[in-house]
Image 1 (spheres, rainbow, N blue to C red):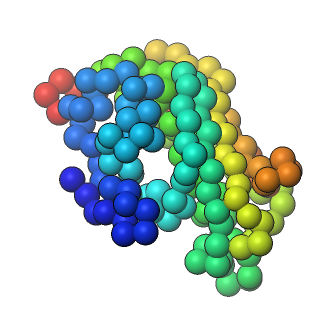
Image 2 (cartoon, rainbow, N blue to C red):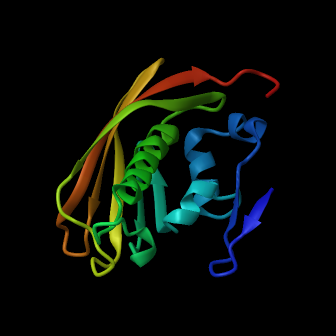
Length: 166
């Protein structure tokens, strides 16, 4: 189903659509976090750990490193974007019933404090604001070990029924 990371023994891949459709969003996200389903390949870039999920709420941690640097000598904004977009999307997913999917329509990020390899572990928390039949909104925050806000974001997601037989 995917690649195995030698360093963390994590399987990266994409669960088949019919598997996702057969589970509540909360069960699906927890199965990914528990290693029962493959971790999405995008997460190879940020290697989340200590991941938890409740309905409408997810938290995970990551460690920014030199490999995330941009040409101006700090962690690239894409690192924060991966964390924030993932946290918001997964928070929305945890609130959806079986047979329902979502996709991001838009998101906005505000970078508050620079992130470097010396920042240490960061905590990303995503929460739903509203989950309706056709649209959902969520927010996420990245904080350092001292609770300082590093970046935050909001999103709007399209909610839809997953077509049968996919």
